[in-house]
Amino acid sequence: MTKLQEIYPSDRVTLREVGLRDGLQLVKKLPSTEAKQRWVRDEYAAGVRHFEVGSFLPAKTFPQFVDVRDVIATIASLPGAHGIALTLNERGVNEALASGVAEVAIVVSATEEHSQANANRSRDSAVANVKRLCELRDASSHRPIVNAAISMALGCSIVGPVDPKEVIRLAEKLYEAGVDMVAVADTVGYAGPKQVGELTKAVVRIAGSKPVCVHLHDTRGMGIANASAALDAGARVLDGSLGGLGGCPFAPGATGNVVFEDLVFLCESKGFSTGIDIDRLVAVRSILKAEMPGEQLYGGLARAGLPERKSAVAA
Amino acid sequence: MTKLQEIYPSDRVTLREVGLRDGLQLVKKLPSTEAKQRWVRDEYAAGVRHFEVGSFLPAKTFPQFVDVRDVIATIASLPGAHGIALTLNERGVNEALASGVAEVAIVVSATEEHSQANANRSRDSAVANVKRLCELRDASSHRPIVNAAISMALGCSIVGPVDPKEVIRLAEKLYEAGVDMVAVADTVGYAGPKQVGELTKAVVRIAGSKPVCVHLHDTRGMGIANASAALDAGARVLDGSLGGLGGCPFAPGATGNVVFEDLVFLCESKGFSTGIDIDRLVAVRSILKAEMPGEQLYGGLARAGLPERKSAVAA
Image (cartoon, rainbow over all chains, first blue to last red; front, top):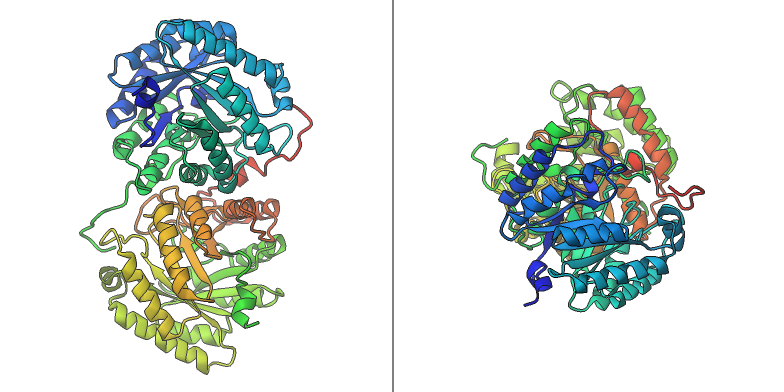
Protein backbone atom coordinates (compact mmCIF):
# COMPACT_ATOMS: atom_id res chain seq x y z
CA MET A 1 0.00 0.00 0.00
CA THR A 2 1.43 3.37 -0.96
CA LYS A 3 1.51 6.27 1.49
CA LEU A 4 -1.23 7.99 -0.55
CA GLN A 5 -3.58 5.01 -0.24
CA GLU A 6 -2.78 4.75 3.45
CA ILE A 7 -3.73 8.38 4.08
CA TYR A 8 -6.68 8.44 1.67
CA PRO A 9 -8.01 4.87 1.46
CA SER A 10 -10.21 4.46 -1.62
CA ASP A 11 -12.68 2.21 0.20
CA ARG A 12 -13.83 4.81 2.71
CA VAL A 13 -14.70 8.47 2.99
CA THR A 14 -12.15 10.90 4.38
CA LEU A 15 -13.43 14.14 5.88
CA ARG A 16 -10.93 16.96 6.29
CA GLU A 17 -11.25 19.82 8.80
CA VAL A 18 -10.23 22.96 6.92
CA GLY A 19 -11.43 25.47 9.51
CA LEU A 20 -7.91 26.21 10.74
CA ARG A 21 -6.99 27.50 7.29
CA ASP A 22 -9.98 28.29 5.10
CA GLY A 23 -12.13 29.04 8.15
CA LEU A 24 -9.70 31.71 9.40
CA GLN A 25 -9.47 33.68 6.14
CA LEU A 26 -11.86 36.39 7.30
CA VAL A 27 -12.41 36.11 11.04
CA LYS A 28 -12.44 39.31 13.07
CA LYS A 29 -10.46 37.98 16.04
CA LEU A 30 -7.84 35.28 15.71
CA PRO A 31 -7.75 32.23 17.97
CA SER A 32 -4.62 31.82 20.07
CA THR A 33 -2.06 29.18 19.11
CA GLU A 34 -2.96 27.26 22.23
CA ALA A 35 -6.66 27.31 21.22
CA LYS A 36 -5.83 26.07 17.73
CA GLN A 37 -3.88 23.22 19.28
CA ARG A 38 -6.80 22.33 21.57
CA TRP A 39 -9.13 22.52 18.55
CA VAL A 40 -6.93 19.97 16.74
CA ARG A 41 -6.51 17.72 19.78
CA ASP A 42 -10.21 17.73 20.68
CA GLU A 43 -11.29 16.96 17.12
CA TYR A 44 -8.64 14.26 16.99
CA ALA A 45 -10.19 12.78 20.14
CA ALA A 46 -13.56 12.88 18.36
CA GLY A 47 -12.04 10.84 15.53
CA VAL A 48 -10.92 13.47 12.98
CA ARG A 49 -7.55 12.67 11.37
CA HIS A 50 -7.15 15.13 8.49
CA PHE A 51 -6.55 18.82 9.16
CA GLU A 52 -5.69 21.74 6.94
CA VAL A 53 -3.49 23.60 9.41
CA GLY A 54 -2.72 26.93 7.76
CA SER A 55 -0.80 28.63 4.97
CA PHE A 56 2.82 29.51 4.38
CA LEU A 57 2.21 33.16 3.55
CA PRO A 58 3.79 36.45 4.63
CA ALA A 59 2.93 36.92 8.33
CA LYS A 60 2.42 40.65 7.80
CA THR A 61 -0.51 40.08 5.43
CA PHE A 62 -1.76 36.83 6.98
CA PRO A 63 -1.20 37.00 10.75
CA GLN A 64 -3.68 34.14 11.23
CA PHE A 65 -1.08 31.67 9.96
CA VAL A 66 2.04 32.94 11.70
CA ASP A 67 1.91 29.93 14.05
CA VAL A 68 1.42 27.34 11.32
CA ARG A 69 4.54 25.43 12.42
CA ASP A 70 3.17 25.09 15.97
CA VAL A 71 -0.02 23.52 14.64
CA ILE A 72 2.01 21.21 12.39
CA ALA A 73 3.98 20.15 15.48
CA THR A 74 0.72 19.34 17.30
CA ILE A 75 -0.44 17.21 14.36
CA ALA A 76 2.93 15.41 14.34
CA SER A 77 2.44 14.50 18.01
CA LEU A 78 -0.87 12.71 17.33
CA PRO A 79 -0.53 9.17 15.89
CA GLY A 80 -2.25 8.90 12.50
CA ALA A 81 -3.09 12.61 12.25
CA HIS A 82 -2.44 14.18 8.86
CA GLY A 83 -1.60 17.86 8.31
CA ILE A 84 -2.09 19.91 5.14
CA ALA A 85 -0.56 23.32 4.52
CA LEU A 86 -1.43 25.73 1.73
CA THR A 87 1.24 27.45 -0.31
CA LEU A 88 0.95 30.08 -3.01
CA ASN A 89 4.51 30.83 -4.17
CA GLU A 90 7.94 29.16 -4.27
CA ARG A 91 9.05 30.67 -0.98
CA GLY A 92 5.98 29.21 0.67
CA VAL A 93 6.62 25.88 -1.03
CA ASN A 94 10.16 25.77 0.32
CA GLU A 95 8.98 26.69 3.80
CA ALA A 96 6.26 24.03 3.66
CA LEU A 97 8.73 21.38 2.54
CA ALA A 98 11.11 22.40 5.32
CA SER A 99 8.31 22.22 7.91
CA GLY A 100 7.85 18.51 7.35
CA VAL A 101 4.08 18.88 6.81
CA ALA A 102 2.62 15.71 5.28
CA GLU A 103 0.65 17.40 2.49
CA VAL A 104 1.27 20.58 0.54
CA ALA A 105 -1.72 22.19 -1.15
CA ILE A 106 -1.49 24.69 -3.98
CA VAL A 107 -4.25 26.53 -5.83
CA VAL A 108 -4.79 27.04 -9.55
CA SER A 109 -7.72 29.06 -10.90
CA ALA A 110 -10.14 27.34 -13.26
CA THR A 111 -10.46 30.44 -15.44
CA GLU A 112 -7.81 32.54 -17.11
CA GLU A 113 -9.58 35.69 -15.94
CA HIS A 114 -9.54 34.71 -12.29
CA SER A 115 -5.94 33.48 -12.52
CA GLN A 116 -4.81 36.83 -13.86
CA ALA A 117 -6.94 38.89 -11.46
CA ASN A 118 -6.22 36.87 -8.33
CA ALA A 119 -2.64 35.63 -8.83
CA ASN A 120 -1.40 37.91 -11.58
CA ARG A 121 -0.32 35.00 -13.76
CA SER A 122 -1.71 32.76 -16.46
CA ARG A 123 -3.04 29.30 -15.75
CA ASP A 124 -0.11 27.81 -17.69
CA SER A 125 2.30 29.67 -15.46
CA ALA A 126 0.39 28.41 -12.42
CA VAL A 127 0.67 24.83 -13.71
CA ALA A 128 4.41 25.38 -14.24
CA ASN A 129 4.62 26.40 -10.57
CA VAL A 130 2.86 23.20 -9.61
CA LYS A 131 5.35 21.21 -11.71
CA ARG A 132 8.22 22.94 -9.90
CA LEU A 133 6.60 22.07 -6.55
CA CYS A 134 6.37 18.42 -7.60
CA GLU A 135 10.08 18.44 -8.52
CA LEU A 136 10.95 19.91 -5.14
CA ARG A 137 8.77 17.25 -3.50
CA ASP A 138 10.66 14.53 -5.41
CA ALA A 139 13.96 15.97 -4.19
CA SER A 140 12.77 16.24 -0.59
CA SER A 141 13.48 13.65 2.07
CA HIS A 142 9.90 13.10 3.36
CA ARG A 143 8.11 13.55 0.01
CA PRO A 144 4.79 15.11 1.12
CA ILE A 145 1.59 14.59 -0.84
CA VAL A 146 1.02 17.38 -3.38
CA ASN A 147 -2.63 18.37 -3.73
CA ALA A 148 -3.58 20.89 -6.42
CA ALA A 149 -6.90 22.62 -5.82
CA ILE A 150 -8.76 24.01 -8.80
CA SER A 151 -10.52 27.09 -7.47
CA MET A 152 -13.66 28.50 -9.15
CA ALA A 153 -14.09 25.07 -10.76
CA LEU A 154 -17.88 25.26 -10.50
CA GLY A 155 -18.45 28.94 -11.15
CA CYS A 156 -16.18 31.97 -11.18
CA SER A 157 -16.69 35.27 -9.38
CA ILE A 158 -15.37 37.06 -12.47
CA VAL A 159 -16.71 35.25 -15.52
CA GLY A 160 -19.65 33.37 -14.03
CA PRO A 161 -20.27 29.91 -15.50
CA VAL A 162 -17.21 27.71 -16.06
CA ASP A 163 -16.94 25.14 -18.84
CA PRO A 164 -16.35 21.73 -17.18
CA LYS A 165 -14.18 20.74 -20.16
CA GLU A 166 -11.71 23.45 -19.18
CA VAL A 167 -11.59 22.11 -15.63
CA ILE A 168 -10.90 18.61 -16.93
CA ARG A 169 -8.14 19.88 -19.22
CA LEU A 170 -6.60 21.72 -16.27
CA ALA A 171 -6.85 18.61 -14.07
CA GLU A 172 -5.10 16.57 -16.77
CA LYS A 173 -2.28 19.12 -16.91
CA LEU A 174 -1.97 18.99 -13.12
CA TYR A 175 -1.71 15.19 -13.15
CA GLU A 176 0.93 15.48 -15.90
CA ALA A 177 2.77 17.97 -13.71
CA GLY A 178 3.00 15.23 -11.09
CA VAL A 179 0.41 16.03 -8.43
CA ASP A 180 -0.78 13.22 -6.17
CA MET A 181 -4.32 14.47 -6.07
CA VAL A 182 -6.63 17.18 -7.35
CA ALA A 183 -9.28 19.05 -5.39
CA VAL A 184 -12.29 20.49 -7.17
CA ALA A 185 -13.39 23.67 -5.40
CA ASP A 186 -16.70 25.51 -5.56
CA THR A 187 -14.92 28.54 -4.10
CA VAL A 188 -17.86 30.94 -4.31
CA GLY A 189 -20.66 28.43 -3.80
CA TYR A 190 -22.29 28.83 -7.19
CA ALA A 191 -23.13 25.21 -7.94
CA GLY A 192 -26.01 22.87 -7.31
CA PRO A 193 -25.79 19.10 -6.88
CA LYS A 194 -26.32 18.23 -10.55
CA GLN A 195 -23.32 20.28 -11.64
CA VAL A 196 -21.18 19.03 -8.75
CA GLY A 197 -22.07 15.42 -9.54
CA GLU A 198 -21.28 15.75 -13.22
CA LEU A 199 -17.91 17.46 -12.75
CA THR A 200 -16.90 15.10 -9.95
CA LYS A 201 -17.74 12.08 -12.10
CA ALA A 202 -15.56 13.43 -14.91
CA VAL A 203 -12.61 14.13 -12.60
CA VAL A 204 -12.92 10.74 -10.87
CA ARG A 205 -12.78 9.13 -14.33
CA ILE A 206 -9.42 10.69 -15.23
CA ALA A 207 -8.01 10.39 -11.68
CA GLY A 208 -7.64 6.63 -11.92
CA SER A 209 -6.52 5.29 -8.56
CA LYS A 210 -5.74 8.77 -7.19
CA PRO A 211 -8.08 10.26 -4.57
CA VAL A 212 -10.36 13.11 -5.69
CA CYS A 213 -11.15 15.83 -3.18
CA VAL A 214 -14.24 18.03 -3.45
CA HIS A 215 -14.07 21.32 -1.57
CA LEU A 216 -17.46 22.99 -1.20
CA HIS A 217 -18.80 26.19 0.27
CA ASP A 218 -22.29 26.51 1.71
CA THR A 219 -22.74 30.03 0.36
CA ARG A 220 -26.21 29.34 -1.06
CA GLY A 221 -27.27 26.52 1.24
CA MET A 222 -26.31 23.80 -1.25
CA GLY A 223 -23.26 22.55 0.70
CA ILE A 224 -24.63 19.28 2.05
CA ALA A 225 -26.62 18.53 -1.11
CA ASN A 226 -23.48 19.11 -3.17
CA ALA A 227 -21.43 16.90 -0.86
CA SER A 228 -24.03 14.17 -1.24
CA ALA A 229 -23.80 14.49 -5.03
CA ALA A 230 -19.98 14.37 -4.88
CA LEU A 231 -20.14 11.14 -2.87
CA ASP A 232 -22.63 9.65 -5.33
CA ALA A 233 -20.23 10.57 -8.14
CA GLY A 234 -17.34 8.72 -6.52
CA ALA A 235 -15.42 11.38 -4.57
CA ARG A 236 -14.09 10.00 -1.31
CA VAL A 237 -12.38 13.09 0.15
CA LEU A 238 -14.50 16.04 1.29
CA ASP A 239 -13.65 19.24 3.11
CA GLY A 240 -15.65 20.97 5.81
CA SER A 241 -15.16 23.33 8.73
CA LEU A 242 -16.56 23.07 12.23
CA GLY A 243 -19.73 25.17 12.44
CA GLY A 244 -19.20 26.19 8.82
CA LEU A 245 -16.65 28.72 10.08
CA GLY A 246 -15.40 31.13 7.46
CA GLY A 247 -16.79 33.54 4.96
CA CYS A 248 -16.01 34.26 1.38
CA PRO A 249 -14.25 37.44 0.30
CA PHE A 250 -16.24 37.33 -2.94
CA ALA A 251 -19.69 37.07 -1.31
CA PRO A 252 -20.24 39.35 1.68
CA GLY A 253 -22.34 37.74 4.39
CA ALA A 254 -21.92 34.31 2.87
CA THR A 255 -21.17 31.30 5.00
CA GLY A 256 -17.95 29.38 4.73
CA ASN A 257 -17.25 25.73 4.12
CA VAL A 258 -19.73 22.95 4.50
CA VAL A 259 -20.61 22.45 8.18
CA PHE A 260 -18.27 19.65 9.27
CA GLU A 261 -20.54 18.00 11.83
CA ASP A 262 -23.50 17.96 9.40
CA LEU A 263 -21.17 16.48 6.79
CA VAL A 264 -20.35 13.64 9.19
CA PHE A 265 -24.08 13.02 9.69
CA LEU A 266 -24.61 13.00 5.92
CA CYS A 267 -21.85 10.42 5.39
CA GLU A 268 -23.03 8.16 8.17
CA SER A 269 -26.62 8.38 6.86
CA LYS A 270 -25.36 7.23 3.47
CA GLY A 271 -23.60 4.23 5.01
CA PHE A 272 -20.07 5.68 4.98
CA SER A 273 -18.49 5.12 8.34
CA THR A 274 -16.33 8.13 9.23
CA GLY A 275 -15.03 7.06 12.63
CA ILE A 276 -16.05 10.49 13.95
CA ASP A 277 -18.20 10.95 17.08
CA ILE A 278 -20.67 13.72 16.24
CA ASP A 279 -21.49 14.66 19.83
CA ARG A 280 -17.81 15.04 20.69
CA LEU A 281 -17.24 16.99 17.48
CA VAL A 282 -20.09 19.40 18.25
CA ALA A 283 -18.60 19.97 21.71
CA VAL A 284 -15.44 21.40 20.11
CA ARG A 285 -17.50 24.38 18.92
CA SER A 286 -17.12 25.80 22.44
CA ILE A 287 -13.45 26.55 21.64
CA LEU A 288 -14.43 28.49 18.52
CA LYS A 289 -17.17 30.36 20.36
CA ALA A 290 -14.82 31.39 23.17
CA GLU A 291 -11.97 32.43 20.86
CA MET A 292 -14.01 34.03 18.07
CA PRO A 293 -17.18 35.36 19.73
CA GLY A 294 -17.91 37.57 16.71
CA GLU A 295 -18.26 34.69 14.27
CA GLN A 296 -21.58 33.10 13.37
CA LEU A 297 -21.47 29.33 13.57
CA TYR A 298 -23.94 27.24 11.61
CA GLY A 299 -25.19 23.68 11.61
CA GLY A 300 -28.19 21.47 12.24
CA LEU A 301 -26.57 18.88 14.47
CA ALA A 302 -25.38 21.52 16.92
CA ARG A 303 -28.95 22.86 17.19
CA ALA A 304 -30.95 19.65 17.23
CA GLY A 305 -28.54 16.92 18.26
CA LEU A 306 -28.56 13.41 16.90
CA PRO A 307 -31.95 11.78 16.31
CA GLU A 308 -33.30 9.99 19.35
CA ARG A 309 -33.08 6.29 18.71
CA LYS A 310 -35.66 5.53 21.39
CA SER A 311 -37.46 8.00 23.58
CA ALA A 312 -39.36 6.97 26.69
CA VAL A 313 -41.78 9.89 26.65
CA ALA A 314 -44.26 10.67 23.93
CA ALA A 315 -44.26 14.33 22.93
CA MET B 1 -56.64 17.05 -18.15
CA THR B 2 -58.06 16.42 -14.70
CA LYS B 3 -58.06 19.13 -12.04
CA LEU B 4 -55.36 17.23 -10.14
CA GLN B 5 -53.04 17.24 -13.17
CA GLU B 6 -53.79 20.89 -13.76
CA ILE B 7 -52.81 21.85 -10.22
CA TYR B 8 -49.88 19.44 -9.96
CA PRO B 9 -48.60 18.87 -13.51
CA SER B 10 -46.43 15.75 -13.64
CA ASP B 11 -43.95 17.33 -16.08
CA ARG B 12 -42.76 20.06 -13.75
CA VAL B 13 -41.85 20.67 -10.12
CA THR B 14 -44.38 22.30 -7.82
CA LEU B 15 -43.06 24.08 -4.73
CA ARG B 16 -45.51 24.77 -1.94
CA GLU B 17 -45.15 27.53 0.67
CA VAL B 18 -46.17 25.96 3.98
CA GLY B 19 -44.92 28.77 6.23
CA LEU B 20 -48.43 30.08 6.85
CA ARG B 21 -49.36 26.78 8.48
CA ASP B 22 -46.39 24.64 9.45
CA GLY B 23 -44.22 27.74 9.89
CA LEU B 24 -46.61 29.25 12.44
CA GLN B 25 -46.87 26.21 14.70
CA LEU B 26 -44.44 27.57 17.28
CA VAL B 27 -43.85 31.28 16.66
CA LYS B 28 -43.78 33.59 19.67
CA LYS B 29 -45.74 36.46 18.07
CA LEU B 30 -48.39 35.89 15.42
CA PRO B 31 -48.49 37.86 12.18
CA SER B 32 -51.61 39.94 11.59
CA THR B 33 -54.18 38.76 9.08
CA GLU B 34 -53.26 41.68 6.86
CA ALA B 35 -49.59 40.64 6.99
CA LYS B 36 -50.46 37.06 6.10
CA GLN B 37 -52.41 38.35 3.11
CA ARG B 38 -49.48 40.52 2.00
CA TRP B 39 -47.18 37.51 2.46
CA VAL B 40 -49.42 35.50 0.11
CA ARG B 41 -49.82 38.31 -2.42
CA ASP B 42 -46.11 39.18 -2.53
CA GLU B 43 -45.08 35.56 -2.96
CA TYR B 44 -47.74 35.20 -5.62
CA ALA B 45 -46.19 38.19 -7.40
CA ALA B 46 -42.82 36.38 -7.15
CA GLY B 47 -44.38 33.39 -8.91
CA VAL B 48 -45.51 31.13 -6.06
CA ARG B 49 -48.89 29.47 -6.67
CA HIS B 50 -49.30 26.83 -3.93
CA PHE B 51 -49.88 27.86 -0.32
CA GLU B 52 -50.72 25.93 2.80
CA VAL B 53 -52.89 28.57 4.43
CA GLY B 54 -53.64 27.26 7.89
CA SER B 55 -55.57 24.66 9.85
CA PHE B 56 -59.18 24.18 10.82
CA LEU B 57 -58.56 23.70 14.51
CA PRO B 58 -60.10 25.10 17.70
CA ALA B 59 -59.21 28.80 17.82
CA LYS B 60 -58.66 28.62 21.57
CA THR B 61 -55.76 26.18 21.21
CA PHE B 62 -54.51 27.41 17.83
CA PRO B 63 -55.06 31.17 17.65
CA GLN B 64 -52.59 31.36 14.74
CA PHE B 65 -55.23 29.89 12.42
CA VAL B 66 -58.32 31.78 13.55
CA ASP B 67 -58.19 33.82 10.33
CA VAL B 68 -57.73 30.85 7.99
CA ARG B 69 -60.87 31.80 6.03
CA ASP B 70 -59.48 35.29 5.33
CA VAL B 71 -56.31 33.81 3.88
CA ILE B 72 -58.38 31.36 1.81
CA ALA B 73 -60.32 34.36 0.47
CA THR B 74 -57.06 36.06 -0.53
CA ILE B 75 -55.95 32.93 -2.37
CA ALA B 76 -59.32 32.78 -4.14
CA SER B 77 -58.82 36.34 -5.40
CA LEU B 78 -55.52 35.47 -7.14
CA PRO B 79 -55.90 33.70 -10.51
CA GLY B 80 -54.21 30.29 -10.49
CA ALA B 81 -53.35 30.39 -6.78
CA HIS B 82 -54.01 27.15 -4.89
CA GLY B 83 -54.82 26.96 -1.18
CA ILE B 84 -54.34 24.00 1.15
CA ALA B 85 -55.85 23.71 4.62
CA LEU B 86 -54.99 21.15 7.27
CA THR B 87 -57.67 19.30 9.21
CA LEU B 88 -57.37 16.86 12.07
CA ASN B 89 -60.94 15.81 12.94
CA GLU B 90 -64.39 15.58 11.33
CA ARG B 91 -65.45 19.03 12.53
CA GLY B 92 -62.37 20.48 10.88
CA VAL B 93 -63.06 18.49 7.73
CA ASN B 94 -66.59 19.86 7.51
CA GLU B 95 -65.37 23.41 8.10
CA ALA B 96 -62.67 22.99 5.46
CA LEU B 97 -65.17 21.65 2.93
CA ALA B 98 -67.52 24.52 3.69
CA SER B 99 -64.70 27.06 3.27
CA GLY B 100 -64.28 26.16 -0.37
CA VAL B 101 -60.51 25.63 0.02
CA ALA B 102 -59.09 23.77 -2.99
CA GLU B 103 -57.14 21.15 -1.06
CA VAL B 104 -57.74 19.51 2.28
CA ALA B 105 -54.75 17.94 4.01
CA ILE B 106 -54.98 15.35 6.75
CA VAL B 107 -52.22 13.67 8.75
CA VAL B 108 -51.70 10.01 9.61
CA SER B 109 -48.76 8.82 11.72
CA ALA B 110 -46.40 6.28 10.20
CA THR B 111 -46.06 4.39 13.48
CA GLU B 112 -48.71 2.94 15.76
CA GLU B 113 -46.90 4.37 18.78
CA HIS B 114 -46.93 7.93 17.46
CA SER B 115 -50.53 7.64 16.28
CA GLN B 116 -51.64 6.63 19.75
CA ALA B 117 -49.48 9.19 21.56
CA ASN B 118 -50.19 12.12 19.27
CA ALA B 119 -53.79 11.55 18.11
CA ASN B 120 -55.03 9.03 20.66
CA ARG B 121 -56.14 6.60 17.96
CA SER B 122 -54.81 3.68 15.96
CA ARG B 123 -53.49 4.06 12.44
CA ASP B 124 -56.46 2.01 11.18
CA SER B 125 -58.83 4.43 12.84
CA ALA B 126 -56.88 7.31 11.28
CA VAL B 127 -57.22 5.70 7.84
CA ALA B 128 -60.97 5.25 8.47
CA ASN B 129 -61.14 9.02 9.15
CA VAL B 130 -59.39 9.65 5.84
CA LYS B 131 -61.92 7.42 4.08
CA ARG B 132 -64.76 9.39 5.67
CA LEU B 133 -63.11 12.64 4.47
CA CYS B 134 -62.93 11.24 0.93
CA GLU B 135 -66.63 10.36 1.07
CA LEU B 136 -67.47 13.87 2.24
CA ARG B 137 -65.30 15.23 -0.60
CA ASP B 138 -67.23 13.10 -3.10
CA ALA B 139 -70.49 14.47 -1.75
CA SER B 140 -69.27 18.10 -1.82
CA SER B 141 -69.98 20.50 -4.64
CA HIS B 142 -66.41 21.69 -5.34
CA ARG B 143 -64.64 18.37 -4.60
CA PRO B 144 -61.32 19.59 -3.18
CA ILE B 145 -58.13 17.57 -3.53
CA VAL B 146 -57.55 15.31 -0.54
CA ASN B 147 -53.89 15.02 0.46
CA ALA B 148 -52.94 12.56 3.20
CA ALA B 149 -49.60 13.28 4.84
CA ILE B 150 -47.74 10.42 6.49
CA SER B 151 -45.95 12.02 9.41
CA MET B 152 -42.83 10.45 10.95
CA ALA B 153 -42.43 8.52 7.68
CA LEU B 154 -38.64 8.76 7.82
CA GLY B 155 -38.06 8.45 11.52
CA CYS B 156 -40.29 8.71 14.58
CA SER B 157 -39.73 10.80 17.68
CA ILE B 158 -41.07 7.91 19.76
CA VAL B 159 -39.77 4.68 18.24
CA GLY B 160 -36.83 5.97 16.20
CA PRO B 161 -36.25 4.18 12.88
CA VAL B 162 -39.34 3.45 10.77
CA ASP B 163 -39.65 0.45 8.46
CA PRO B 164 -40.27 1.79 4.94
CA LYS B 165 -42.47 -1.24 4.23
CA GLU B 166 -44.89 0.00 6.87
CA VAL B 167 -45.00 3.42 5.21
CA ILE B 168 -45.73 1.80 1.85
CA ARG B 169 -48.51 -0.33 3.34
CA LEU B 170 -50.01 2.79 4.92
CA ALA B 171 -49.76 4.69 1.62
CA GLU B 172 -51.56 1.82 -0.15
CA LYS B 173 -54.35 1.95 2.43
CA LEU B 174 -54.63 5.71 1.95
CA TYR B 175 -54.93 5.33 -1.83
CA GLU B 176 -57.59 2.66 -1.26
CA ALA B 177 -59.39 5.09 1.05
CA GLY B 178 -59.64 7.45 -1.92
CA VAL B 179 -56.99 10.14 -1.41
CA ASP B 180 -55.82 12.12 -4.44
CA MET B 181 -52.26 12.31 -3.23
CA VAL B 182 -49.95 11.25 -0.43
CA ALA B 183 -47.25 13.36 1.22
CA VAL B 184 -44.24 11.68 2.80
CA ALA B 185 -43.10 13.75 5.79
CA ASP B 186 -39.78 13.72 7.62
CA THR B 187 -41.52 15.46 10.51
CA VAL B 188 -38.56 15.44 12.89
CA GLY B 189 -35.77 15.70 10.30
CA TYR B 190 -34.17 12.32 11.02
CA ALA B 191 -33.37 11.24 7.48
CA GLY B 192 -30.51 11.62 5.07
CA PRO B 193 -30.76 11.71 1.27
CA LYS B 194 -30.27 7.98 0.74
CA GLN B 195 -33.26 7.10 2.91
CA VAL B 196 -35.39 9.89 1.42
CA GLY B 197 -34.55 8.77 -2.11
CA GLU B 198 -35.36 5.12 -1.42
CA LEU B 199 -38.70 5.78 0.26
CA THR B 200 -39.70 8.37 -2.35
CA LYS B 201 -38.92 5.95 -5.17
CA ALA B 202 -41.10 3.29 -3.53
CA VAL B 203 -44.03 5.68 -3.02
CA VAL B 204 -43.73 7.09 -6.55
CA ARG B 205 -43.92 3.50 -7.84
CA ILE B 206 -47.28 2.78 -6.17
CA ALA B 207 -48.66 6.30 -6.78
CA GLY B 208 -49.05 5.71 -10.52
CA SER B 209 -50.15 8.95 -12.15
CA LYS B 210 -50.89 10.62 -8.81
CA PRO B 211 -48.53 13.36 -7.60
CA VAL B 212 -46.24 12.50 -4.68
CA CYS B 213 -45.38 15.25 -2.20
CA VAL B 214 -42.28 15.15 -0.02
CA HIS B 215 -42.41 17.32 3.09
CA LEU B 216 -39.00 17.81 4.68
CA HIS B 217 -37.63 19.56 7.73
CA ASP B 218 -34.13 20.98 7.89
CA THR B 219 -33.65 19.96 11.51
CA ARG B 220 -30.19 18.45 10.94
CA GLY B 221 -29.12 20.45 7.91
CA MET B 222 -30.14 17.74 5.43
CA GLY B 223 -33.20 19.60 4.03
CA ILE B 224 -31.83 20.62 0.64
CA ALA B 225 -29.87 17.38 0.16
CA ASN B 226 -33.02 15.43 0.96
CA ALA B 227 -35.08 17.55 -1.43
CA SER B 228 -32.50 16.88 -4.14
CA ALA B 229 -32.77 13.14 -3.48
CA ALA B 230 -36.58 13.32 -3.56
CA LEU B 231 -36.44 15.01 -6.97
CA ASP B 232 -33.98 12.41 -8.24
CA ALA B 233 -36.39 9.72 -7.05
CA GLY B 234 -39.29 11.20 -9.01
CA ALA B 235 -41.17 13.40 -6.53
CA ARG B 236 -42.48 16.53 -8.21
CA VAL B 237 -44.15 18.29 -5.25
CA LEU B 238 -42.00 19.67 -2.44
CA ASP B 239 -42.81 21.79 0.59
CA GLY B 240 -40.77 24.63 2.06
CA SER B 241 -41.21 27.76 4.13
CA LEU B 242 -39.79 31.20 3.54
CA GLY B 243 -36.60 31.58 5.59
CA GLY B 244 -37.15 28.07 6.94
CA LEU B 245 -39.68 29.58 9.36
CA GLY B 246 -40.93 27.20 12.00
CA GLY B 247 -39.55 24.91 14.62
CA CYS B 248 -40.36 21.44 15.68
CA PRO B 249 -42.11 20.66 18.95
CA PHE B 250 -40.16 17.39 19.11
CA ALA B 251 -36.70 18.94 18.68
CA PRO B 252 -36.09 22.13 20.68
CA GLY B 253 -33.95 24.67 18.82
CA ALA B 254 -34.45 22.86 15.54
CA THR B 255 -35.19 24.71 12.35
CA GLY B 256 -38.41 24.32 10.48
CA ASN B 257 -39.14 23.36 6.93
CA VAL B 258 -36.68 23.47 4.10
CA VAL B 259 -35.78 27.08 3.25
CA PHE B 260 -38.14 27.92 0.39
CA GLU B 261 -35.85 30.29 -1.50
CA ASP B 262 -32.92 27.84 -1.35
CA LEU B 263 -35.29 25.13 -2.56
CA VAL B 264 -36.11 27.27 -5.60
CA PHE B 265 -32.38 27.68 -6.29
CA LEU B 266 -31.88 23.91 -5.98
CA CYS B 267 -34.67 23.16 -8.45
CA GLU B 268 -33.47 25.72 -10.99
CA SER B 269 -29.90 24.39 -10.66
CA LYS B 270 -31.21 20.92 -11.49
CA GLY B 271 -32.98 22.20 -14.58
CA PHE B 272 -36.50 22.33 -13.12
CA SER B 273 -38.05 25.65 -13.97
CA THR B 274 -40.18 26.85 -11.05
CA GLY B 275 -41.46 30.14 -12.42
CA ILE B 276 -40.39 31.75 -9.14
CA ASP B 277 -38.22 34.89 -9.01
CA ILE B 278 -35.74 34.29 -6.17
CA ASP B 279 -34.88 37.96 -5.57
CA ARG B 280 -38.55 38.87 -5.25
CA LEU B 281 -39.12 35.86 -3.02
CA VAL B 282 -36.25 36.83 -0.71
CA ALA B 283 -37.72 40.35 -0.44
CA VAL B 284 -40.87 38.90 1.14
CA ARG B 285 -38.80 37.99 4.21
CA SER B 286 -39.15 41.62 5.31
CA ILE B 287 -42.80 40.93 6.14
CA LEU B 288 -41.84 37.99 8.36
CA LYS B 289 -39.06 39.98 10.03
CA ALA B 290 -41.40 42.89 10.81
CA GLU B 291 -44.24 40.71 12.07
CA MET B 292 -42.22 38.07 13.90
CA PRO B 293 -39.03 39.80 15.05
CA GLY B 294 -38.28 37.01 17.53
CA GLU B 295 -37.99 34.30 14.89
CA GLN B 296 -34.69 33.23 13.38
CA LEU B 297 -34.82 33.08 9.60
CA TYR B 298 -32.37 30.90 7.68
CA GLY B 299 -31.17 30.55 4.14
CA GLY B 300 -28.18 30.96 1.86
CA LEU B 301 -29.80 32.96 -0.92
CA ALA B 302 -30.95 35.65 1.49
CA ARG B 303 -27.39 36.03 2.77
CA ALA B 304 -25.40 35.73 -0.43
CA GLY B 305 -27.82 36.54 -3.24
CA LEU B 306 -27.85 34.85 -6.60
CA PRO B 307 -24.48 34.09 -8.20
CA GLU B 308 -23.13 36.95 -10.27
CA ARG B 309 -23.38 35.97 -13.89
CA LYS B 310 -20.76 38.53 -14.87
CA SER B 311 -18.92 40.89 -12.59
CA ALA B 312 -16.98 43.90 -13.85
CA VAL B 313 -14.56 44.07 -10.96
CA ALA B 314 -12.09 41.39 -9.98
CA ALA B 315 -12.04 40.76 -6.25
